[in-house]
Every structure is written in structure tokens, then in C-alpha cells.
Image (cartoon, rainbow, N blue to C red; front, side):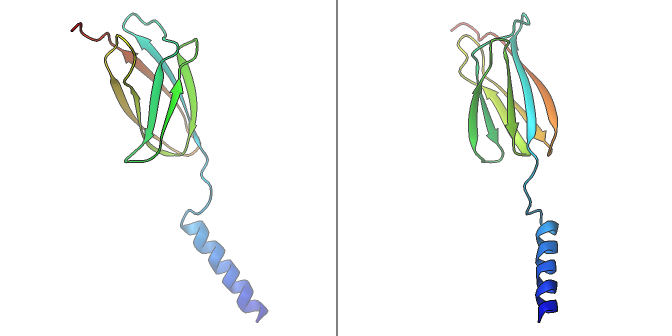
Length: 113
């Protein structure tokens, strides 16, 4: 009876390990936002959305025009859509577990209406 229980526990643990039911190491995304003149832009709101239809979060660039986000591994849309005077920008990236990735987003001035 004891051997049957031990065998069952070992089988369940092996099945969980095989199906990836363990926490994944988050990835880190470092990003800078600048303009056409290479000026780093502070206080820019950036939207991070896990693809295809996952959760969305927002971050804001610091005084140096940068931000850092720790994210679950996967595909992401990184977008700036509400920066006054600038055209919207969207980028896509894929983050692997434990990866540290650098991204630069360049905003272009929106055409005058």
C-alpha cells in the first residue's frame, strides 16, 4: 500500500513537471522613448499588452525617457498612442523566461491638421 502511494506521488510530480506547471521566471524589458531629434522623452505613457488578448498594463517613462518592466514570458505589443504632438507607435516583441531585452521607441511628430 505504501509503495502504491509513493508511486502515485512520483507519477503526479513527473506529470506536473512535464506539463510545465511550475512558475516561470519573469523577463525584463528595458525601453527608452525618444523623438526624431534623439531627445529622450519623460512622462510618456506606454501600454504593454500580452498577445493575443492578454492583460494590459501601463507604465510611464522616467526623467531619462526610460522604463523597466518585469513581465511574464510571451508575446507583447508595446505602444505609445497618446503622446501629444506625436504619431502613435506600436511594436511587437517576444520575451523568453529570464530574458533581459532592450527596446528603443522613436516617436515622430504628427502631421499638422
